[in-house]
Image (cartoon, rainbow, N blue to C red; front, side, top):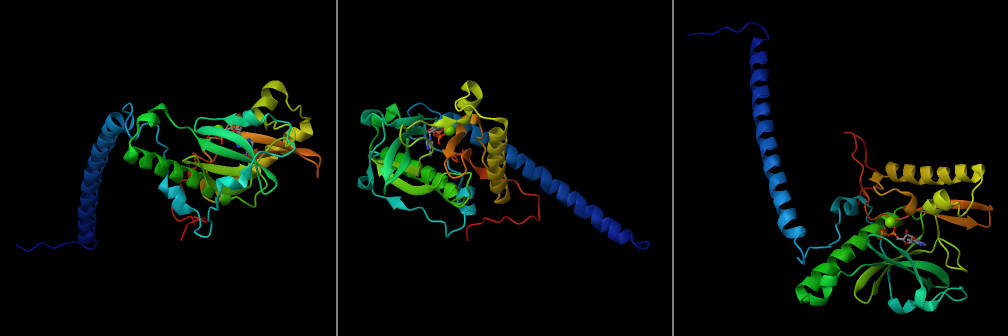
Length: 275
Ligand SMILES: Nc1ncnc2c1ncn2[C@@H]1O[C@H](COP(=O)(O)OP(=O)(O)O)[C@@H](O)[C@H]1O
Ligand SMILES: [Mg+2]
């Protein structure tokens, strides 16, 4: 039997078939995604969070962020013996711990005559019982995590709203990050935005508040323009430093460890991509 199609009808039928085919493929992909999500949740539950597992406490690294940083951004490796206690600082040498966070401890040191902050990852209790394989896995994970943080910091090396990054250093088997010290170099005092809000330390005039907010906005804008989200922006992760040149407090964004890629609308260029 001969079927005659009216003009355009054949195309309509073909399009309909294509649509049905696409809907079928979408359904299959959705069920595959559901299955993968389920398997991932089982993996997280059974392996990653299992007490004393090799992965317990392990730093997470987003490879996509590392891939995103241009390849000409290189992380300098600094020798531990090139770090010393800060000369002239009125701080107790045994008590040079200047900060603590979720990831690690931060110490005040001197490198090439400059005050620096050294961020050393925590070593969990389980480490005492770890075997060589577990030790290697932990060090590799910390190394990857610190390198990612250093790379993100280095990508903003020329921006005044971020601390300068000097490199990474091995502190007794713990890969650690060395940043410009933000605070009072003589007393070792650090001023966070959180202290300024809660205790007015430092007490800021309206004009200084405005300038500090502008520093934060400029820093964030620059991150977003380069395709990154900070992802952990809070008053504790903003440090304030008095600068003699312009006689004002400046705000610095720290703790880039949770940076992720900013989801881009399709067709938009990503301007930082590592080649
Ligand atoms: N460059 C720096 N200069 C001075 N202090 C710092 C610097 N970086 C971090 N700190 C101090 O160490 C604390 C923890 O550092 P942070 O990078 O936020 O680590 P975490 O990822 O563990 O939260 C900060 O809240 C701050 O008090
Ligand atoms: Mg922090």
